[in-house]
Image (cartoon, rainbow, N blue to C red):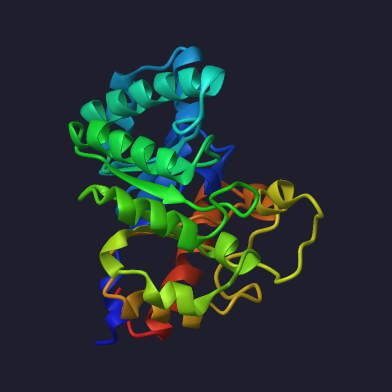
Length: 279
């Protein structure tokens, strides 16, 4: 079997179904045979404000035999002032979710204030706090922040040297950023904590980077990214990280949740099958 078969746990990112109800997203993930779902901290706050409860979420997950596995995204953890205060509140919320539902992964994003030495220290401390809740903390690089690429993110995580630390490699940010395959091949496989899979055009369709990545992603195979090389390069590092399907697409989100999820999952499995996975 090709080493790509090691990367075979499939999750449904929260943002792939941003406008679906909790019931719809969990049911869609279950019908597609996925291993778990992601949840944004912001959406969870909104869920509680709308009068829902942890007991209700437990019931929904139980009825569909699904797990909450991924939380995102924590920002402000390496900043100061109001940003740091908001991060502390979000961190407390993430730890509550971890203790209640057992997710294993928390996404962290930039920017950071001060120096690279400071962000390494802040990240190490975050990992230490998260460890008490059995959470791995992955740094996601974003080209519009000062953690813009995988080399920077891996440098922070590597220097922090925490067993529950690592990076998230999102195909969109990789191809729309440096697209440095040599750097990707040099990342130790154990440092990759999460892979976010999606496709897209190589040239932006919107000059606003954030707007583009929140509307114009494609299912694997429907865009121009060399996902075959991307996944083979990751697999060759020995990475065994889960794959989170994150196709943030306006056209997909106009479809019923189940149909959209089936389309995303089918295309992802076709990609993995093409490179030798046993899924």
